[in-house]
Length: 146
Image (tube, rainbow, N blue to C red; front, side, top):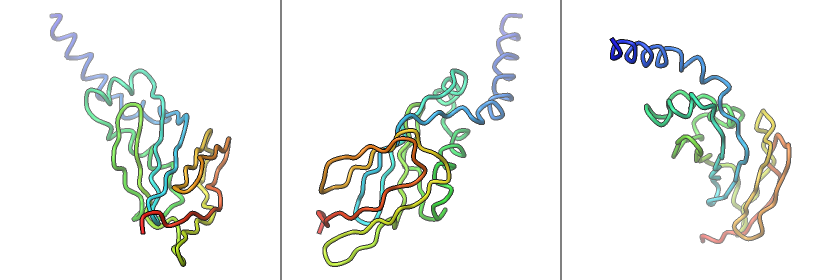
């Protein structure tokens, strides 16, 4: 009898979790690091308790749409989730900067939503922190890879 109750409880959790996962990702910090013309974004976030248990047990497929929503204004073909777990995601966006004569130029790009804390770490300078912003800053950085 106890086994049947446990199975029913797990099944009900599995059936309700996809709906409950909507809005469960609270991004606390986004780190933007440049890799040539591309940028790697590391999102640190907190999940609701049930969502965290679900991700630990079954993987992060249900929170992928919420992570992708952070980058909805970028070209969909340029956005790739490289790593995703219950605390952090790494997303690479291709072609966010243009190269010219030893420097990369990054024009401001809207996120389409407000980032609580955005840390921009150019390869040739110190990290800069932007609070409650909905876009990346315009900047240029030296080609340190060339």
